[in-house]
Amino acid sequence: MDPRIQRLVAFIEGNPHQRLSLGIMARSIGLSTSRLRHKFKSEVGITPTAYVRIIRMRVAANLLKTKELSIKEVRAAIGLESDSYFTHQCRRMFGAPPSRIKNSMRISSP
Image (tube, rainbow, N blue to C red; front, side, top):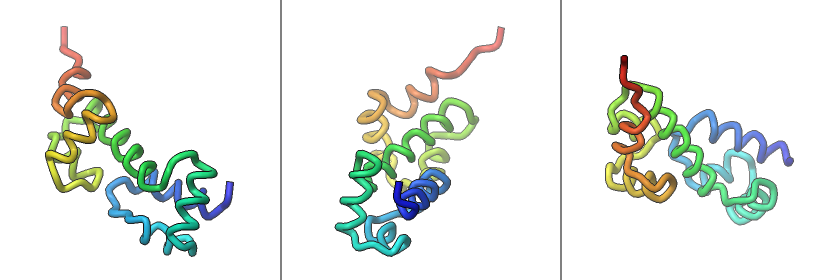
């Protein structure tokens, strides 16, 4: 994999809360937006923006399942401002709203 793409992937995974437009990502590794989109998709299999969305939602699901954070705190932790957009993305990716993801993973004490 191109080292620039590897650096970008590592940055995305380590900073899910960052606002990352295609332009910002392209400039950060010295490529044009069209070249980044093409190169990233050919090496990773999806577009950079789709990758950012997937990573954010995976982090959100883990936080919802393992932490005692509110849904709003989880949403903020992955850099989203809109509750409705967060709910939409959870339904789209996991087939359930954040509240169901959070509540379904709680383990009751004996």
